[in-house]
Length: 220
Image (cartoon, rainbow, N blue to C red):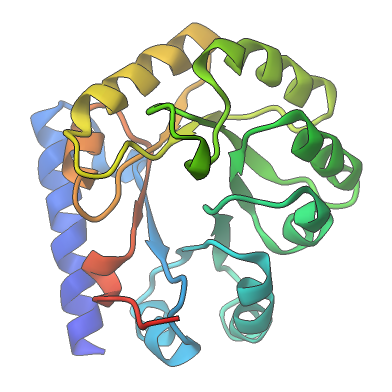
């Protein structure tokens, strides 16, 4: 538990420092602990020291791990941060409090069907680096997808992105902030373990941090 608490404090301190440099309120930034591929015994120490926002990449994995943890810690907020298959939309809406990876019309349609029973916060994911394998809506289609999400009753609160690996992330974060402003959206889900401080300085409201909190992921 001590190591988990130390890692969490180190990340929170870095977020606070970056926010202050940017003239922002650190309390307005949500730290999502990305727990994909980590078992409950690795997750529980962070829960026990009070952390409540966690992210997962796969519906099936989250279904296996989180119902029991949510019974023990009912105020947990679970975020879907991986690419979501349309046929898993209803399951995701029933389990996750927020879905960060809405990126295409077929997914919007299925999430819209589930919205009446499971109102879920959403982000529109943008293909910021034009990398189809990562998912994301093409930049030129953001406005159209935003409108479809509103019509389906799952209006996004913000935009999400994953910059290309091995490149300087800051220009992509700045571009996402510009695109969100054009859409009148306040929230930005951007920044991971290697670049979350830069993301905070460029306006991130949600950062998705895994390795810095949990260490290296186990092999699949």
